Length: 300
Length: 264
Image (cartoon, rainbow over all chains, first blue to last red; front, side, top):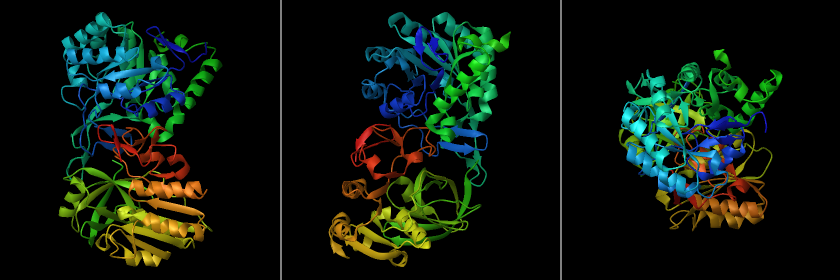
């Protein structure tokens, strides 16, 4: 076992640095390439029951402080993605992200994921820019709880739940824990609006988008910190991680693993190996033998 | 916002379906031939367009009427209108010096190659340009191309101008005797595939500039992926070397807005 190996809900990953959902994970070729680049796991782009074109462009902007996107969950539909990725090896390192709009949809897709041979799903209760999905749906505690319960009762899948920034994130996590969820992933992009001052109208076709990148890192750290105090479940920290130091900060706040997204734009796919090296060095220099031994250390 | 604000300075009708736009930007773009910008003309979708030339703060974009956004721009954009630009994005062409160079263009694929030829000429490299289109009325920039090329070869499929037939056939004829060191191509993918295959099989360096569905432009969303190598055309392309392309779906498949593979 290497120092970087982590275990989440009984499944082992060679590195605690994963690819976040929504980034690159919509084709077998990129999933494979990311895994080969040193990511411990890849979370696919969220799939829905039916194919979605996503929002019209403009659906992406670069800001001084990060990125704003409103892709609008474009995907070929769950069956199409599963067909494309079913031949990939190391299925335990591929987590299929599901964006349902009801318990039934989540359940139907999860069943197909298990049949295809994957071991874990991430339920998207966090996308901030699509109506009736994601963050908006997380306000319906019943759908959140019942989706988890039904998948856990009927399948052997590990169920991660991705939450977005909201006032009651810890409360939601407690419901998830009680319903039998296996891990909390926090957070998604943060809902925002960007206005083009010359066009005098919102830049994004969908008006609302999600802010990602460096700017949201301290907010994500706060969520992970609070979640660690509120629940026993493993937490996977996401939000503005660009360097190994950002990742270590997440571990100390209480994350058992982290996910990377936007930083790939600047650093390319080498970022996984780079962060792995930095974490490994930090552990060694500070006398720790594993990631586990630093998880939540900031809470002493 | 890191977008660059621009104003339409001049609109020129190049032919029945192509217009070129001079756009004055608030700051220099600093593009390389082969790179593209995401162009948003409020009222329609944002689209990727190759830079066709850049001089100071003015850029030239050559836009063919191919879909909803380009039609909207054709119908509405006029002098003084606001246009938002982000970029430049992607990898451009390698600017080769001291070599015998050919550019092979099909249709509106001439735009980035015109920019490239102009840049190469500034560096003292005289390029041969092969330019093909369906018919005489499809050809654009003829005067400009004569000014920036050592030789200009033209083919039209219906024979209304220059060689009658495909530009790839005309290129093949000259390829063996001219002994090019470096070839650049841009145009319909099936055409580029022929050019790339010919060059690679003769061990001649070749770069092709691809068109894909592009959303983010910075390598995050994965919409533009070239399978099975997982290459992100938006940032690792759109200019890609021939030997890499021949190990991929180049010329065969691309992805649609739903991320589904579709035949080219």
